[in-house]
Image (tube, rainbow, N blue to C red):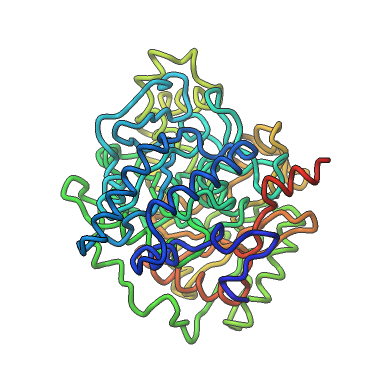
Length: 489
């Protein structure tokens, strides 16, 4: 299937990859001003129905930035790689002089004086930040809604959730509002919405993208920043702009360790793959399993050496994740909790309280268990090059449901248990990528999760790229606003 032949009524321009837009800008075929104008037109058309962009820079300001790019290019200046590309930033990350609320009334008027490190790196790469993408309060939960901006809807069915906490980013990508967007991921906040919205999301190895300004927050490091895009090659492009060591973050990885060779297009000849359809015994809804069974057949065309595994090595990982996550919430939000808890939603309050009540014995026990589980997981990688498993255990659910309380009639004991298929991997520094894997009978997307050894981000993306090129699921675009309106008539 050709990359330039989108389906479902999308125009090629609306569905262009970031790498194609960059090439057109560099050649002069496309001006930064015209790209910016079409971007704002797309947002005006789509965002009223989906609500993915929660804060938008005035168009005059963005056009001025685009004009500066065009002028510099006309003068023959050597420009950075992303020069002129519009970009939206998740509303958890600080953006200089641009409203950053974290989805909370507590920060409804907060305008940072500096950028988060990865944001400044994207700006230095030439990207033009045009706004912020919606997120749940303080990024808590995998359904994007908050009292400031409301709910973000799934582009494939606006009555369903887009996932979260990077739901705004995923929905903006799926509808063509932007070609690149960042996400953050502690327990699946980047992978989950990517799966629900048929885009690509990479949770990189810990340290790949420095966590500044949170480098010194021990437990909060489990949350990492990563790229989201419609294709793997665009994710790789964005990761290269975001990644690289920083002396203020002692655990950050040098950019040289992100080895871009062989190229994404050079398909690995042989790979040993472990397929965990119900990882660690977790329940998975039938539509998810059905789509992923077909996806596994597609993968076997590429790499026949696939062995089904149970991944029971991670059976206790959710308990470890729950402790570390609570510690992270207490570490990052205790001050706000003590001053403004009356303005927080219950799930955030509960997590902070759980973290504040943790004893040193409980934390030490969780860390000891994490190390034991890490060793067990690495023994699995002695047998396999990569692991395959579901991103989500459920299909996108109705927007009025805050979170699923059961999966296959198995009760979920907390508001994050239903996304355990992502959470159980987060404590172990491994790169995890959500790749579009197909659609259920109702036309809703499902994602396949590809997991690699710590540091093997490029290898994960190479495998994902091979699968993407074989299947082409990313090219099935959601209905446009006009098509959805026509359906409602």
